[in-house]
Length: 283
Image 1 (cartoon, rainbow, N blue to C red):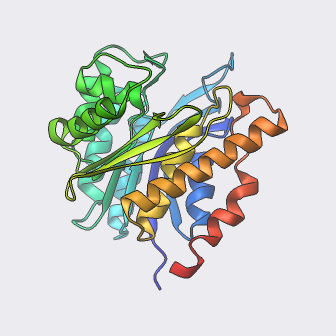
Image 2 (cartoon, helix red, strand yellow; image 1 turned 120 degrees about the horizontal axis):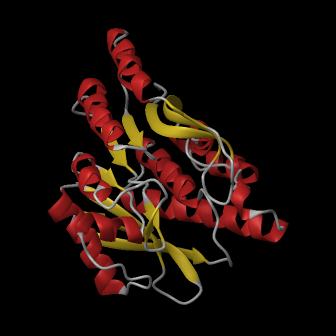
């Protein structure tokens, strides 16, 4: 069986378990070749760390993609995460046009905000620009804040079932994504997870897991990467969402129990063997 190849387009934060330092090991554990296209290199992620270094790689993005095109490389999926500027958003649209075939799964995680606020460095007009990339997605994976910004709606920190369904339907009907997974959704007390909308089946499903106290950096990247792994390995959107939520929740619980600083990211490594075993029957 041919090993699937996924192109992950994210930044590299050297310390802090997020973006490519999460996507690469998770996809690899699922038996997927992970090609990487870094958008920037940072010493740490930008949450709760000060004095971090930042090296922008915007000028390298298109030449890298053009080299891969000249090699005839094919990708089963293209998975985008943090993009730091309008220029990078436009460049990634060019990369998708250059490298994607009709069979390439496009997954967009519009990393730009959380808890009702844009991340530092993003201006209020950034979500409108991000919409044009999200429209290309087969699967769009925002959190509740990002979905609200993309749709121009007021942010509700505790969306109920009807609000979640409305956000998912808007991401598909108004933005143009074929399917959507909304992360950071809590529909029952003490539970946190994600809701998925398959526009072709016109079905909405929810996957939840016990919630641990605190905020954990990189949890969205971990969930999205695990979701991509499931989809590329042939699982349904509902199955992939459930596996991703369970894997992320177990990593959060492990980190909480260990008492490590949340800014250093989730202790997901100890769960990779079990995560990998889920895909053994698919080889």
